[in-house]
Amino acid sequence: MCNDIEKVLIPKEEIATIVKNLGEQITKDFLGEELIVVCILKGSCIFFSDLVREIKLDVKFDFMVLSSYGNSTTSSKDVKIIKDLSENIKGKNVLIVEDIIDSGRTIKSLTELLMVREPKCLKVVTMLDKPERREVDIVTDYNGKVIPDEFVIGYGLDYAQNYRNLKDICVLSPSVYIK
Image (tube, rainbow, N blue to C red; front, side):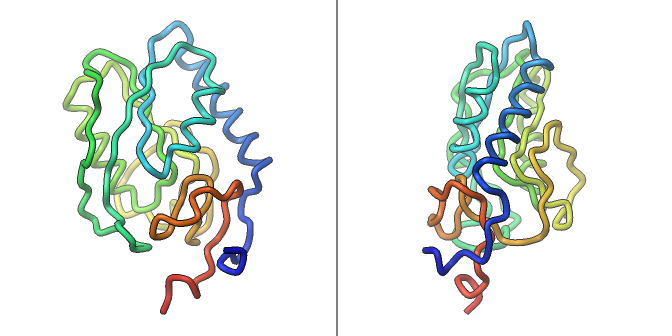
């Protein structure tokens, strides 16, 4: 696996600082409010777990599974909902937790879908943002770190379901996916 890593982009210590700062800001913004935190599986599960422990509020958890990548390094541009929310979000504060936003298509489709359900407010937090790859107009409310247009793995991010368990966010060597 080490031969597959081109470089460490964000070491685990920096990740912890980013997550702590995001949790503090979210706590301030929703102080005294009820909050449903939605994890977008599978990629966001590690970020979600760390983030909710830094949010000093009573929060409810919910989970969604979306698909747009499959085993590819590029989005199919066809976002599918595999598992929908269990919780009714009408009139409630909702925070979507996403691992990475690049083209913006997935999160744009998701926010449009959830806004129809009439939440009190709908916000998005992402660990990573790749604005160079943006294909649609999307603004996130909380951004962990802007990164360059490189294929990243680790801290929940994968390539063909591998590498999610790496503690650092790393750049995958192109030799792994360019054949």
